[in-house]
Length: 220
Image (cartoon, rainbow, N blue to C red; front, top):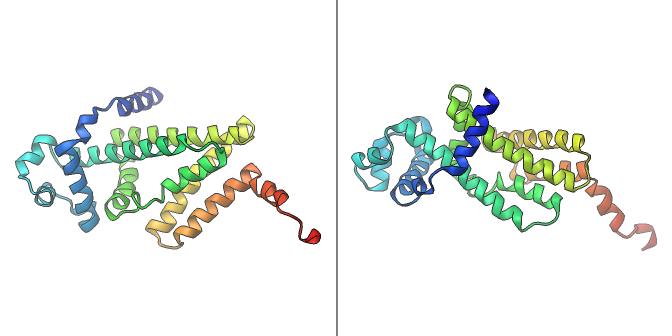
C-alpha cells in the first residue's frame, strides 16, 4: 500500500495545477519564504505574510485555508522549482559525470541557500516523519534524484548493481554535506562540493582518466 501511495504522490506532483504557483499565490509563497528567512518557520503567521505582501489577511485565506496549507504549498513549490531547474540544467550536459556534479551543485546554489529556502528545507524533511502527505512528497523527490544518479552512473560505465549502490551513497552524501554546511556550519561550501565531486570522480574512475591524460613529469 505504501508503494501505491508514493506513486500517486509523484503523479499528483506532476499534475499539480501550475496556476497555483502563479500570480497572487506565487506572490504569497515568495512572501512566505521572505518571512521565514527573517523569523523562521516556527514564527511564521498568516498576518506576517499578509503584511509582507501588502495584502489583507482575508486575501491570504482566500488562496490558502490556513498556515498548514500555505506551508505545504510552499513545500510543493520548492520541490517543483528545484525539479524543473534540475531537468533544464541536466538536459544540456552530455557528460554523465558532469551531470551528477551539476545535480549536487544545484543543492548548494544561491537560490537553495537563500535564508528563507534554506530554513524551509530542513522543516520539510522533519515534517515527513509525522505528516503522510509531506512524506510522500519527499519520497517522490528522492526517487527522482536517485533515478537521475543511477542513470548517470550507468552511462558512466558502472554496472547496474554498483550504480544503484553509488546512487544511494550520492544521495546520502548530498544530504549529509548540506547539513554539515548549512545547519552545523562545520565545513565551507567549497569543501562540501569538493568532497562530492571527488567521490563521484572516484566512483566513475575519472581521477584515473584525468591522471592518464596529463603528460608525465618525467618526460618534461
